[in-house]
Image (cartoon, rainbow, N blue to C red; front, side, top):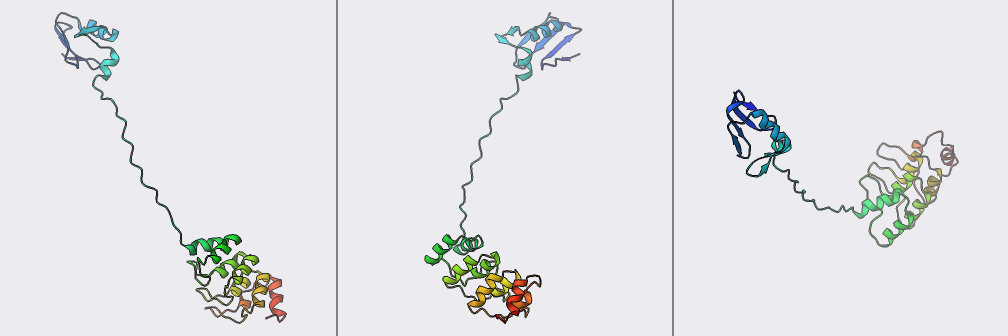
Length: 209
């Protein structure tokens, strides 16, 4: 009955003797008259069996395992540069109060102050929402319109009253901003004032408008 060596070698024989034949994976063999246990023992000891080839237990296990090849590296995709429009860059500068950069944009005429950003507001509206009075004054100096409306009909004064910036509201009123302008919902700037913001309440109650 055939015996299968765990090291990958097949030994055929009858009761361990007579027609015993050792068949190696490489095609070498040892014929007849050799007890198969002796052959297995010799293989484990790494003896030379035939054709000058040394077969150890490790050799038997790995004789037919192909060498692993390192996969070729994947080609790198080219890096694409991202470009933003001047309007988007300018909007970001206004939101962060980058006064020097805002001045450079205006002097280079890279943007128009009446342009509505994707937010639906113009630069002056954005500046008012940050509460940065100096930025508001800078934009007005470069020609921003205090009467300009956003996509919902809000003026910069609506913004100042809604978000609780009395100093900005007072400044806009001093430039002639209308306290009676209504947005698309029919609201005037004073209608948006938080009653807890006493400075704004007093500003409109004092007859400053």
